[in-house]
Image (cartoon, rainbow, N blue to C red; front, side):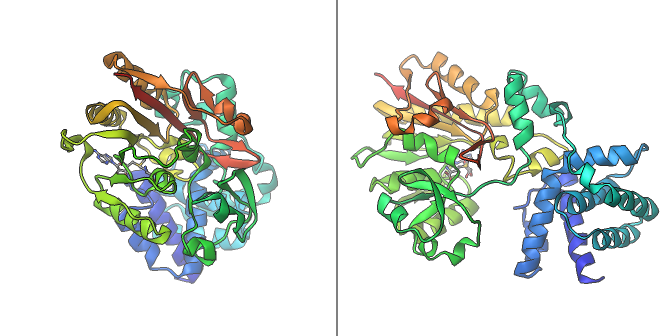
Length: 422
Ligand SMILES: C[S@@+](CC[C@H](N)C(=O)[O-])C[C@H]1O[C@@H](n2cnc3c(N)ncnc32)[C@H](O)[C@@H]1O
């Protein structure tokens, strides 16, 4: 196999195992395939794989225009990836068509059909680029969970969900931001969007540990609570890989960082080392925490469908199976319940998810407040100079959808701060 064919063959296998076997790009079997390639090829592979998933609904619509009969899953995936390269990434048609036909032959697929369809698509690529998809074409499970969204919210989502994420970074201090060597569009005195994306390891202030990557939406809740240095006992119950915890640590607070996953704790430790932060780490199931220890501020950044991060994790819509909401809702409820037991009087729970679906957000808070009359919602407190962000706070809750601010992309996110009043 020639080089271009070999890498596209791997891309096909990766896409197939995400679609059919419910794998993610981080699965060890997929990482093994990726790690065989050199740096330049990995960047090509990531570009094609991620964008094939981001544009798979657009590409499926194009396939439907050219093929009326049912095709096999492998043929569909091969076409999705080829269409993404030709139409949406603007790669040279002949290389993509030739490689796709050779892969089809190796996999015993209908290579004549692949050849004919891709050649027709190449001729019309400028028109096909303009194709729009409708909310109705999104996965069934997602439509069922978003019935309460307004038409405006649905339209905005459909315009935004497939676009590449922007890179938002958070500094340890205002001084570190002032010293930053790259172009930045500030979102606050300690945060901003990187104007030119590049390999972070090539930026000296990153290697020195002056800042970390954190989406604006997930940075915003703790930022608007205006956490300062205090003697409060902080706990981050689901801490890895660490963004929220770094926000607490950058104000010289002590915080216990817990996470159930050993693998993710390792990444958390690497991040802490780079940032020169020191903190106590615990690797336990939070539900099994000893009830004797009490805290003043507990962060629950709960496991969720992650649909707010659809741009970074396009496999969420690409997999042929949706998230296990029943299971996620139980875990989210149990994490909140456990936090309420471990909280000191007048303490706070900050519940967050990278989701905007009611079942994982508002519903969880309503259920909790109904069961716990000794808790109330505590309002996010925006400084006057950030009034432009007040649209993200509604009735004391913070919610964003995959959207744009200052022409840069942000994730969908949810946060509620609960105060124990007795
Ligand atoms: C959304 S991520 C947390 C992100 C992190 N707070 C940050 O800012 O980088 C959710 C985390 O919850 C952890 N987790 C899931 N169930 C847990 C449990 N029962 N106890 C502790 N951690 C859990 C997962 O391993 C995962 O790392």
